[in-house]
Length: 291
Image (tube, rainbow, N blue to C red; front, side):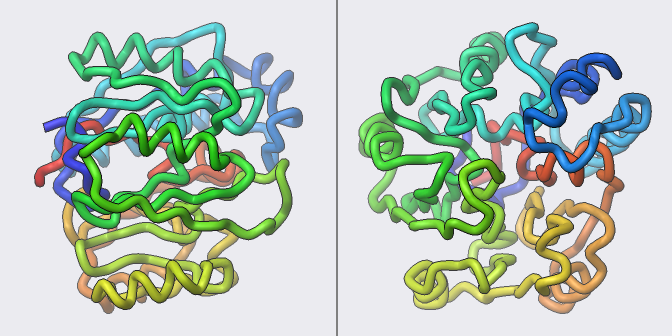
């Protein structure tokens, strides 16, 4: 089943773009990183080693990995492949990036999806903007979509139409200004489900209606401490219910997850995550999960 409309079912198949193809090399990194608002230039050799270890961890945890090829149309940010598409049970929907420098990424990913036999249901187009980091399945029939600088009202409306009867409820979540339109801030910056009734959250930036909705649905909330929000503590990838992958360097968040009964697997992402402000969910587009 494609997508399985879940953020927490056991992962079966994931599409990625390896740091080798996205980063290109030291010269390409030197030309691009400032314009993309990276916190520093990724060190190419170290980034490749980090990515290989990250990929090996996902394989050890049961995922089949599919790698999109190199593409001269896209750059460093194409490593954060989640943003380019949304998966549902009927196939994939291509996004239309709010960050102008990333506009070619969805079409670049289309070829890999077709090669993998994933039906492409359509694409967000025209004035619509939508990035996958703003799209979170709360359950099989309920989708939350962050409305911020990367995803606009027209993009949400097009997504709703393309999903058709795949969903019962689409919850629009207004996001905070935070650091403004040039910074990366998605719904998944403040919300990572880790089980059907448990989520990792950063409440200081979470809209009250969303927090109340989660509590009303019976979610337990694991709170990320403020000092670990900036180190991507809230961005974790569930590979199965209460099993997740997170970026090393967030010990208090890890401790709180483990107290909630979550098994945590860490990886070093100083080059591939911290400098581009993208965690393990950003690096992956799960295509199949157990329902």
